[in-house]
Length: 325
Ligand code: ADP
Ligand code: MG
Ligand code: ZN
Image 1 (tube, helix red, strand yellow):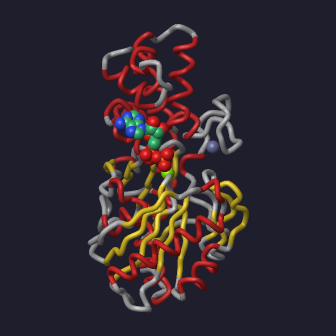
Image 2 (spheres, rainbow, N blue to C red):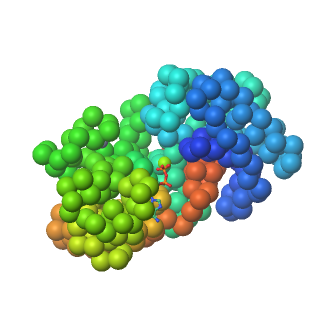
Image 3 (cartoon, rainbow, N blue to C red):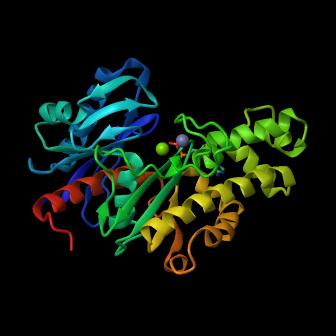
């Protein structure tokens, strides 16, 4: 087993990379604009260049593995990225093998949120925890489930989509094609949609004012809510209720010790978490609910990199000791 990993985050407008050790010490972060519209070849070239920068600076040994996290459906078992929501032109790209050949290193790839669950476990808010539900409230809603210390990803490795559990058969259409998913209430796009609807129907002058002629975003709705606007608060109330219902069902299935809430939208805090805390006990069984603690993520802006490194260490650990307990 190696003591560090080269972590690469393909999640955002920039590709980021750094060396991360087993104690969660992170080296200098190098980054480059993803340039996603140029397509897979150009993006992969940049990933290779960034890893080379990290290698030249930190001089890890040849056995040091590379961990890559990306949003969207990918198969960590075959190393194929099926599709990238923010990566035009990516269709069933064998990313792991391409990078492995070009870097001459072993590579693992993982979904960003599933990997973040491992990151929280190894370096973040859920250390020592073996039963975790992680949820990332961003533009979309990602998630990851760890049960008995094992990351639950299913038959093709695309599972753990906590955000796409439906809580309402009559709910909004979700970006995934489903109806009434948690994401269709709590995702940043859903909060913005609801804010826009209020403004268009003339029911929230406060949201309109907070937008200052700019676009209506989740931040704008949060600002109006903090200023006391009842309609804006109602959006977070409804979103928190949806999240509480969904998490309640998951708590019943997994009997977790902890729920960790991450992502940019988690910054709204109690506005969203109060209705979650109110609804969770209504939808989780009385015998199961008391075991769970709700915590904010502890990984911050480097969540992607910690997740990528955790993926490497998790892979090494599970390939040396297949028996978990
Ligand atoms: P991603 O787009 O990769 O999911 P983030 O996890 O950073 O990125 O989440 C971005 C979403 O969170 C956007 O919808 C944004 O409007 C929202 N957001 C970010 N910061 C805040 C904040 N302080 N208050 C409310 N919403 C926020
Ligand atoms: Mg994300
Ligand atoms: Zn969905």
